[in-house]
Image 1 (cartoon, one colour):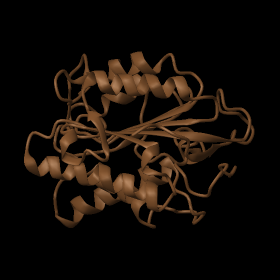
Image 2 (cartoon, rainbow, N blue to C red; image 1 turned 30 degrees about the vertical axis):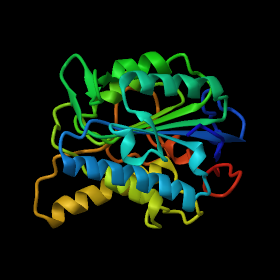
Image 3 (tube, one colour; image 1 turned 180 degrees about the vertical axis):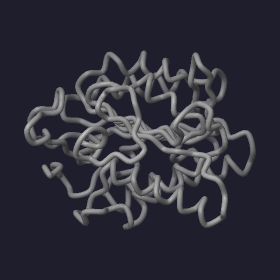
Length: 277
C-alpha cells in the first residue's frame, strides 16, 4: 500500500497561532499504523484486530481508501493484501522519512504504535522484529520534518517516555502510560481505535473525531473497564501537545495541553477545516 491524501484540517487558535500552521487550511493526513512483536498468539490476534479495526474505521466511516494507509506488522503474510511490510526498525524509519518528504505545512502525519514497550532511565523502546525502535530513533527521523503537524499515539506498555523524547512544536504525543514503569499490557489501543470505529467519542457531534476526543474517550473507557472488574488501574494515559515535554492526564483542550489535539482530524467531513472554539 502507498500513502495518499486524506481529508483533514487545521486552523490557528483564536488569539494565538499554531507554530508553522498560522493560516486556516485544508491539509492532508498521512497515516502509518505499526503493530510490533506480539510474543504470544493472543497478543498477535489482539494487535491485528486493533490495527485492522482502525483501518476499517478510516475506510468505512471516514472515506479513506485502503490504498491511502500504510500498515506494518510483525508477520506480513498474515494479511498480505493489507500489510505492506514487516514492522522492523528500518522499515518504520523508511516509511516515516517517505512521509516527511511528502508532507507540507497544514498536513497531518499520524502514527499509531500498537504492541509491547520497555524502558529505563536512559531509553524508551517499542518492541519490533529485530532491534527495537527507540523514542530517540523516532526523534532522529522526525526532527528534520518541520512542515506538518505530527501526531504520534504510542499505545504500548511503558510508553510514557515517548513524551519527553518527542515533545515539540506542532506535535501531539499521546501515550498509554505515564512512565516507563507501567509495564503491564495496556488496553488503551482497543478504546482509542473504538473512538474512530463507533459514535461515542464525537463529543461535539460534528461528525468528526479529533485526536483529543479519541484520547479522552480511550482514557475514560480504560478507567471504566478496570473499575468494572474491580482491578487497580495500572495504566495512566498522557497527552502533550504544547511542547513542554510534560504529559497531562486530562487535557482540557482550551489551555495548556489539548489545544492542538482538538484540531487534528483524520477524515470526517470531506475537505474539513477544524472549527475555532
